[in-house]
Length: 83
Image (cartoon, rainbow, N blue to C red; front, side):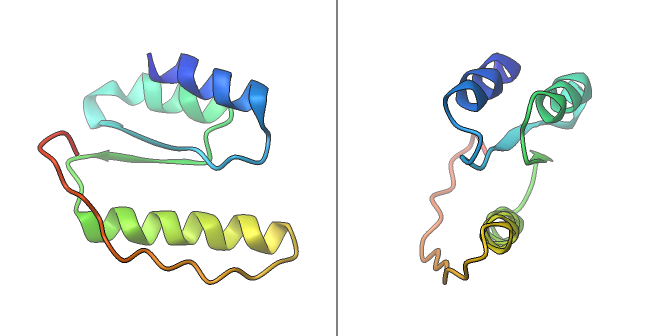
């Protein structure tokens, strides 16, 4: 499940940003994911523009924490029926 994926990634790297995508009805899983180290989440359904904005904000925060500025340019978002 998603919580186990977050745990696995966190065990490998503390620096890898994790954004969880899940349906709002799985609120407990979203909360557990955040408690296990996810940096944020998006509850489905959401717009592609919101997803891009969240990813940019996440990278901006992470790069500020690292003392760096990185120009993140997301040019294409692939939308599927699963988002």
